Every structure is written in C-alpha cells, then in structure tokens.
Image (tube, rainbow, N blue to C red; front, side, top):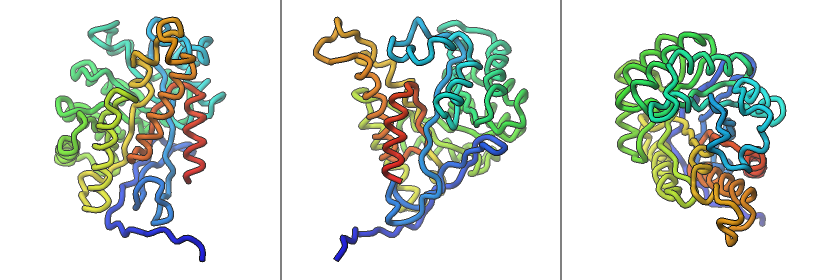
Length: 314
C-alpha cells in the first residue's frame, strides 16, 4: 500500500493580497495549510522571489560577489531594475531607498522619489518601496511616490507604529499596499495590524514584515516568530495575523561580516563568492519554510537555487 502521510485539518487561511496592477500583477497568500504542505490543503499561490534594486550606486558598500552580476547598471537604478526583469526574470522589484538615510547621503525626499518613480515606470512588474526606518524621511518619500504612481498599486515598507497613520493614509488615498513592519514579535505584529485596521486599511491591503535576521545573525529567532504568526493564523483563526509575509533577506545577509570577508581575511571559510550566495539561499529557504510568501533577494545565483527549491516543493 502506498504511503499515506498524516494530515492535519486547519481552520484558518492566509488572506490573498495583490501587488501591482495589470497583466503582471502578483497575488500572494491564500494558503490554508502550513508552508509547502500541499498534501493537506490548498496553496493557490507559490512563494515569490523579489529582486532588490538600490536607489544609489552601492559599489562602496557591497561585496565583490554581489556587485559582479550588476556592474554595468549599478549607477542607473532604472536600468538595474530592467536587467533584473529582462535577464533574471524578476517577478517583483524592491527599491531600497538607501540614499534617503539621514545618517548617510540624506538626499531630499523629492530627489529620492524621482529616482524611485523612474524605476517603477521602467518595469512592468509590481514594485515594493523599502525605506530606511526613519519615520520622518520615509513618510516624505512614501507620500510623494504614492502620489506620483497612484495607478501602480505599490507596496510601501516599512510601515511602523511610529508612522503608520501618515503612510497608511497615503496607501488609503492612492490605493497602495501597506507592509506592516514590527521588531520580531508576534504581539507587536498583531497590534500594528489592529492599528492599521482602525485607520481603515483593509486586510487585503496589508502584508506583514516581522523583521528578518540573516544566517548566524538571528535567523532562528526570525524563523520562530514567523512560524508562530502562521500557526496563529491557521490553527487559532487569528484574523489579525492572517496576512502574507515578506522577508527582506538579501539586505540582511549581505551586510553580515562573513558575507564580506575575502579569502585572505578568512581562508577557513572557503570561496567568498560561493559563501555569500549560499548564506543568502539558506536564509531564504529557512524563512520560506517558516511561512514567508515573498523573499527579497540580491544575487542571481542564490535566487536560482531558491527558485529550484520552490519548484521542487510545489
């Protein structure tokens, strides 16, 4: 007799949220079972991999291995995004607004929004705008971009307790998606979703960012919190946690010390290029198993490995 796996009955479901507009809009969520448990129930939308693009040239900050695939476009964010879509098959683009950071370049919000708008208009796939977690600056950039691209159904991130009213209002006014970001805590994630609901943001317009740690830098804690969010949503029918989850993987992994050490600095760690790629892929796979619906990644080779994993599991 063929093997029959034990099956669990789940009473909850993750809401579906659509990112972008038009023919290449992407719907995430919708699952009624734990990640990849398709033998137990419905997973209508497989997890997605988004590719990140910075709004500035990151050459001074990135490891050589991370820069190599994009050397010809790092100085042009729009061309970079097009390369991600045309050459690497990106289904979503995440624009990291690094130049806005008051502790860094501190570029004016208008200038940042202009670059982001060019990226959005350069591609035909959904776009997520990822800020620098400075409430004042993020609010300015998000408001301006939300208005400029009101027909694109963007996702605005990170929306935190300190700025949810301002950014949430922009999402409501221009019909964008909120990425609710909280610091690796189930109750804080739930509380922020409640606040957004009280503001008037509908469930189909919210994605959760529970905050991500890279491999060796808090991955196990991120995994645990993400898993508990999914468990509460599916087995306890906690409607305030029944949202798709996004994880900003590449940005976290490639800033880790081990992803940037050269072969001379750390000969025992092996080839530095392969090391960073595997660190990113392992982190992404771990968070997909925990329940992430979207993982944001950087290196095309790491993305290839993760997409192969998703294909096998679905």
